[in-house]
Length: 490
Image (cartoon, rainbow, N blue to C red):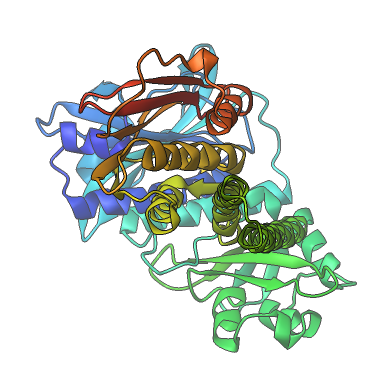
């Protein structure tokens, strides 16, 4: 399905400012659809003047849809929908008394011009499915009145509002809680859900007749509500903003409150206030934050413990007279150190994933800084590992460290020099890793299946058992040795 911006650029002469206005309107038109109990379709004028393109569509959550199929991207020639043509040409809301019949469904149609900077840039058709229509309740009457005020503001260029909002991802919808206030900020109507939200704050009576900002000050302690300017602007319905109040210690009630001032004829007549109880969401957020902090602390302690183990092994190696035993302990120190690097990275991460390039670079420095080889070896990385889960990062770090260390120790002659290249490349869900050196290469008749080296045994076990991958070992293009790993990462 094409996007609004793609349709605008492909089929219309609207500029970037017009597109930004339409996108701002789309950000709020679920509210309008729900208040109207109607489908909304945004019609964009074709640059050749032959009709309109459907740039957006929104179905109501409060009533039946009038459109079974998606129509975004379809073309409406001039003359097909006379109300859309009239709204575009006359620049005012066009209504018709008799409903239209779509697929044996009676639909009431209304066309609203979208005005920006004094000119009409699009038309919104509001299409109400009339099947099952009954005498509206007081709630429905207030919804429809608010929708009427908003559509009048759209036609006048007063909505959407470019005013800054905090843009909560969990911004309230109409059904979460609806309150209507007059120009003084006094409640004239509250939906049952809106009343329930304030009952959770401690209200015992009705909302109607209260100054909403004053009532909120009585119910919510000052330390759990926004500053006075924000509170008065939002709860008084004077500014197009939203804010959060409540919450805090003891799992207190948390609310997101959003105000949409109403100026259908240019003069402020009041506002609609949308409310949402986000107490459970905030409690889960706090639990996740606590869990994440605990996990990071565990990784930090594991890293510290591994470093302690490495220090003890290093101390033991210094006290052993046997060169072979000391070398084995030094190898164990490096293996423990490679795992510690991963846990140190995870202890600083917000999620249980790591950018492995940083780990690979730190392992490369370990090889060149503390390697036991007498050759002068350089290590460089080509390509990127990307982001990996911790379950993959830990064994992969050991594998990469082991292969680079083997190359540094066994690939070059004493007193010589050379280069080790660590290559990484992702192909969809597969990660290919190669460690190549330009040293003397593998001995004649080498067979990976017959190799008895502890390092290669560790690598092979980790690659095949832990990572579910495949290991190859052979001659590099530069004449040295190439170790290749291919493993799934998603």
